[in-house]
Image (spheres, rainbow, N blue to C red):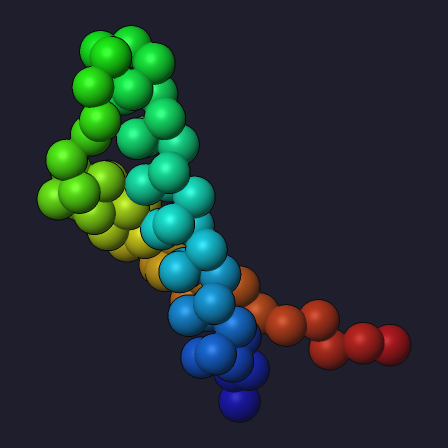
Length: 66
């Protein structure tokens, strides 16, 4: 039986990655171009960053201990 990382942990990590990616993208956009990144742009970047993270987290197996 394959043990997977619990769903709530995968969701929590994915949401954190989405928020951080959107924030960093907005900050860099503001610093480079001088005007705020539209919210749909930050959402797009956050969503696209969540896809590979979710796939990676599905492959991670918890430590069996011992």
